[in-house]
Image (cartoon, rainbow, N blue to C red; front, side, top):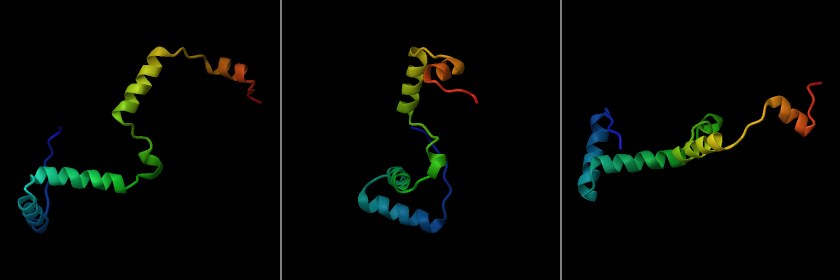
Length: 84
């Protein structure tokens, strides 16, 4: 987990503090849940697709380590693609 410093207005803090007391959950827990729901309900469009999950990054690094790569020219030749 990472620690963050967050500044919020007084009204939002009081609402969060009350919700924390009523639900018997920590403010941190409520904020983590709210942030998680926000990310589930919002999209970043094509820019968002550039972000990788850590498992994606691990998979890509494994592929890069284990696969043999060919040059672009060899790939074009093999696929019958010309630069014309």
